[in-house]
Image (cartoon, rainbow, N blue to C red; front, side):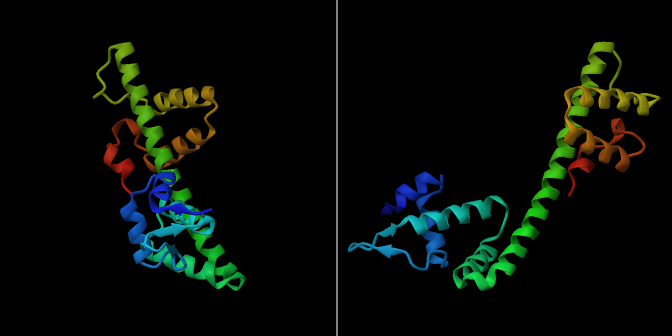
Length: 176
């Protein structure tokens, strides 16, 4: 089947100019053109676009995508190099997800902190004298929700900030 650049752009929520740029930098080396010079994407080209989109979502740079696709086109002899690239990217994504989960749990903790302040009428600027008990109460809410990823992230935050999460500036939690 043959697809126009507009059809492919719509399928992947890309702009036509993005696809043209990808073609200009060599990501579609075998793209066919009609008699008027318009790009004609076949199923293989659409699969390439899907790979590019997935790699871009994984924060892979265009030069790295270009290198990866060159390895792909070189055939099965390059499987170990491609596998290593994907392994490295998977590890990087896991690190990003862990940081995001910690940030999410910290925000949830602060929301819970505010809810507690509203419920008890205490000033949120006052750090509880026993922050371990306060944080243990929050952990109990995470345990009740069965959010094991949240529990692990909360434990990492507690280990990183032993003085207590009530006094940790948000900017420290989100810093890379």
